[in-house]
Amino acid sequence: MKKEHDTGFLSSLRFEPLTLQNWGKFEELFGAKGACGNCWCMSFRLSKSDFEEGKSNKGNKEAKYALVKAGKPTGLLAFYEDIPVAWCAFSPREDFVKLSRSRVHKPIDSKPGQFPALLLQKISAGWAFQSPYCRV
Image 1 (tube, one colour):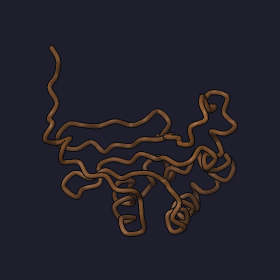
Image 2 (cartoon, one colour):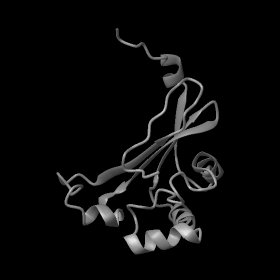
Image 3 (cartoon, one colour):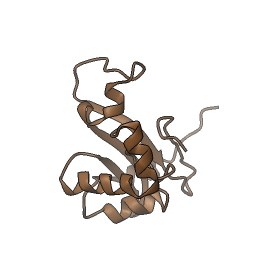
């Protein structure tokens, strides 16, 4: 039996690029520990040593904030009734240092974008998902 989805929920989602104006909503979604052990969705943007160092001193959060402040593309926030419920990281491939050296995630075409991480908050409608790229 095919499960029917609540299309009202889906049609009520709103999407916004991450900006200084909605940074507080990003913090709300990611929580005190940056969603994935102080990752702040910087794992693929930094070398392993820089990423690991940034996990212990708020460096990853500060690095994400600096990207946003500089107007760089970082990703989209999804909102349900003004509550942040999802995050999708995206940026030009060259911004993801870790992916550029990966044999597993190497480019398969010449298109410029890359989507390495998704994070969705479980909400009352029962929708939840987390990308395997985002390590908990």
